[in-house]
Amino acid sequence: MSLDFTWLSDPLYQTWMLRGLGTTVAMCACAIVLMFAIGIVGAAIIYFRVPVPETLTTIVVEMLRNTPPLVQLFVLYSRCRN
Image (cartoon, rainbow, N blue to C red):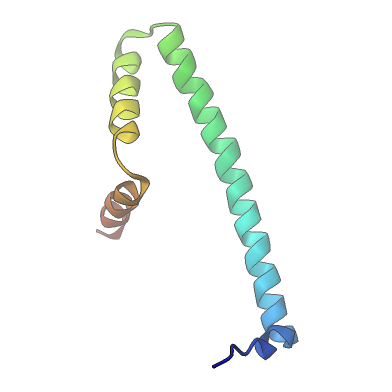
């Protein structure tokens, strides 16, 4: 038994893989910037003790902190699908 990686030399697959890599890197960069901004806003809300948003931010942080990422993805998928 041996693995056959000759398909990697096909220019069509190389194009698809490079396009997919570019899309993945772009999505990661956007997600990092967006999550950084959301984190700064949430930290500012908690730091400056804004009454109602502070409570909501604390609840969201505590709920997300205590659930595994896979469970969060399942919930997000089930919400978006319906």
